[in-house]
Amino acid sequence: MNISFIIPYSKRPFERDNSRLISLINAIDYIPKTNIIVFDSTNNKAKNIPKKDNITYIHSPLNNNIYSPAYARNQAVKFSKSDYLFFIDVDLLVPRELLKRLISIANKLIKINITAFEMFPCLYLTEAASKKSIKTINKDIQLSYLTSYMIGHNDIIESIALATSCLLVNRKWFIELRGFDESFLGHGGEDLEFICRLALHTQKGSVPLDFSHDKKSTHPANYKGFRRYLAQYSLTHLFEYDFFVHLWHPRPLTHKYHRQRKVNEQLLHQKLDKLMTKTPSKITDTNSKMTSADILDTQYQHWINVLQQHYQWPFPTYSGLFYWKKNIIVKRYFWRKCRKLYVKPKLFFADFIKKHMHFPPTN
Image (cartoon, rainbow, N blue to C red; front, side, top):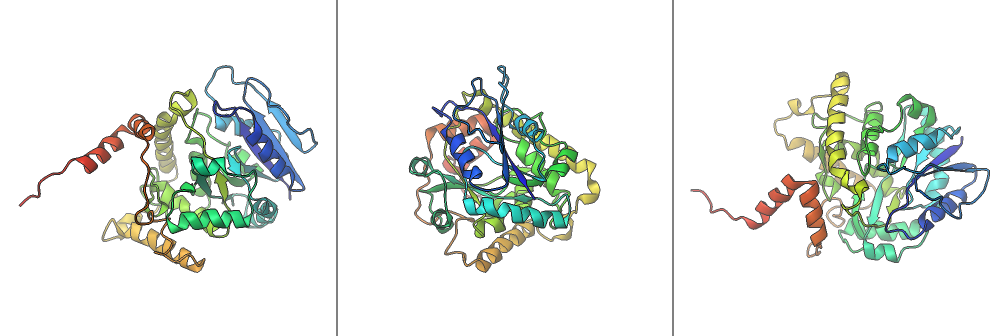
């Protein structure tokens, strides 16, 4: 069993060189019997790319169009002849032990069926923690990061993503599904849309009616919509230390790549709505069996609670998946408020009213 690591790359304004790309290549190249495929969309070729038989480097400038991770990944896959694909981004710190295990994980997947896949979560470092970070991580470092987050602290880890593009997928199945949707341009959407298509072929339990809605939260216990459903594909990996760590970087809305986020969120909702109507036989009306709309949330949170207990992270001692620890200061940067106003104006004003408007009690 062999794996091709797919790395889409586009040089960002905040990055002086391509050091993150080189670090990632070197970390992966440490693992034997792997192929690395880099699809570089920058105007100038990346420097210092190792010249080895197992490393394929493709340079294809953007020609002033908006960068598309979906297109970059799809094009890179065309150069792969491996049994399995693993998608990974340059902002990730990679645990080498996890990379080694991917071969055995792929061997287990193929014994299930061609549609089986694995998705791995990411912990997002704060800006301060990223500046102190090293190029690769081991289990001891993972434990320190995970412990900080699970306790409910936010000085090292600022957020978590359970639905990510860190995907291990059968190459033939990826091609049959036609890969990532290239109508998504710029930041966001293309990975979630593809993951949802994968998940609807390997259902874990009932698919909720609100599946097409992107109801995210800082804390996974409060997820709704497809994020709540997809959590069951990756949360176990978190407790087994099969997770990646994402380095901080700015996301300026002045950059056309990041300005696409709002457009892509709307496109994602449309795509998922259409996907659900095409596959009605796969959908279970979970809510129709409930006496209260809150029951589904309760069941989901109970599942997280039981899972934590099983892996010796008992709640509420470890509350990070539910809420920050008491007295933890959540920094509200002005630029984040401006970003929220631009990207999600309805939510911005709803939160503003909730925080600042006080209505007298009714009799």
